[in-house]
Length: 343
Image (cartoon, rainbow, N blue to C red):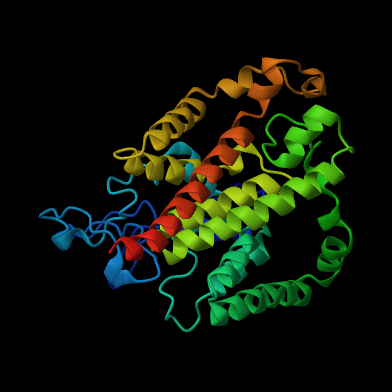
């Protein structure tokens, strides 16, 4: 409950509802005691891949028959319970909510598939990147529903707060500097890395080239992985594209680091590259070593040598991980073309 002198933010209310313990037959307020004899567990994130019948099955336990209520990417709930994820959920961040769901909008045959992406993009623009994945995977209905849903949230905003909406869509949205200088250490997008290297205000051309290449290659590789049945890789590859090309990607926005780490841990059983990349993600996120780099008051603009590389560590690691996903897509695609000939 917010203090009397602080207004309750709508997105905070959404987070409160989302985090409330849920059980069949109704919603119990967060913190309320369970009725006597009610030993049912809280609902865990569900797999939202293209085909529910093809989802990985978690090991069953007596309390979870068939193991169907577990998230296959996080059977122990480790990622959902991390401080970074819980912080983002308490703030009502759409990225964290999408990350926990494990897919854009549920099974492909769902009639209103795409609505979730549109609403999330209407609340915060970054999730709109998943619309490109819908287009690339030729999910025609969802690719139409998503932008229409997003437009609906915008129209609702104009209806409820017309003056503020006009100000935002005509001025505020184009002023990325309103939340801080792009060169600040916490900005781990291309814009942040280029600003620290070239200086604030001198990154437009370089950013445009890098963003275009990243979107084409990254979304293309993610779409291939989606069609190959690797939905988690497709989702995380798409989000990595968003992190890299977004004007601002603060470190506390990188809630996707945990699902990425879980994906790499799973792949590490047979993939040496996944072991190395996963180790780097774990080291970077747990140690918070990046904050030992001089920052604030423009000191990021005067870094040299290894410090400039260390200052861009999340950017570099995100790019390496995206390259790993795209490489796996290409290898699997080439293997599918060669196998029939050998047979």
